[in-house]
Image (cartoon, rainbow over all chains, first blue to last red; front, side):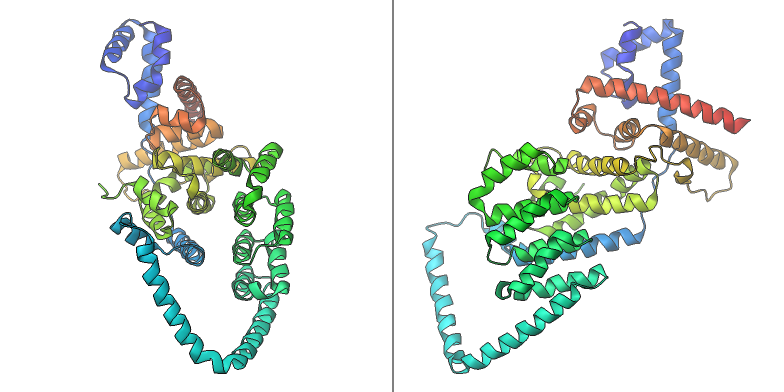
Length: 266
Length: 185
């Protein structure tokens, strides 16, 4: 082994990844080459000294903030997808044996029976319920619009949470959620608003406004949330949207990577 | 040895069991914190970046294919955030050495104090390296990632990783020697 060979193996030597045969050759060279011996000695010594730097403990606040954010994410997840126990049950049972209708038909029958019973009970009180719902919606809209105007981001998050319930029946709340999703200074509020809009029957207007805001969204998380919303609400345009965003290349690197990885499946 | 692997936990998170991210946090947040602390040299920023890394893992969980190693995937998220941090702080390309964390020194034993001084010196030298070289040494020396894993993370060849580690160590030696001679005078 010559000096060049030693230089090529410094990293492997330091990390202890040098094969035994090469280590033997390297030691033989070091015995006759003072510059290489000195170089490798210095670097090995420094490599060991790096190990003196102790690890630190983060503050307990990090754990608290993480679990608060995780709880919020879990709540969002529960609203949008199957619950965790369902997935655990699925794993426990494995694939359903037999035809799907063998499970679906009894479940449907049970659901219908319950539905009929509840309807019979409420049929005489229909107008009362409608009035109460209108009042609740009106109050909820008022609270939503008011909270979304607050300076505090946590108050505006509450506003989004209220808006989530009435948005499916109230266009003014939908408009307020769009404004929050596209212009709110807090990323968390934007994300929550986009998530709330996902619960509203998709309209071209909502999708167009969110899509138009992509250029102004600096957060990759928000960018990804908008892309996911567009994919879900406009499945026939997935290919067009993906191609355009990849061509423009103006989104965050990680979002573009995600799009590129999803593109073949689309 | 954990009974459930990191890959399995992350696959569950991807499939909707968001709470499983808590276990991954417990396993890896100290490691990520120390990596990011040594990268950015500021405890509060490091904690924010750890939090953001886990939120990114949640947000981009569909990109986890379960084939590669979880650790490498996690560090790819963390280093992207670190790179973004440095891009946004271009006016301060070098981390202030004053920000370098002081090693804890509880003992009054002379040799232990000397060791703590030594640790502080080498840490300050490390903080003086350009971020890309510092990151390389952190991944190799502290995170014990294999050269192949680092090459995958950086998108370069294994040979290039080895050459860069050698260069980074040489630069660290120069900086360290300068600081050591200043400290002794």
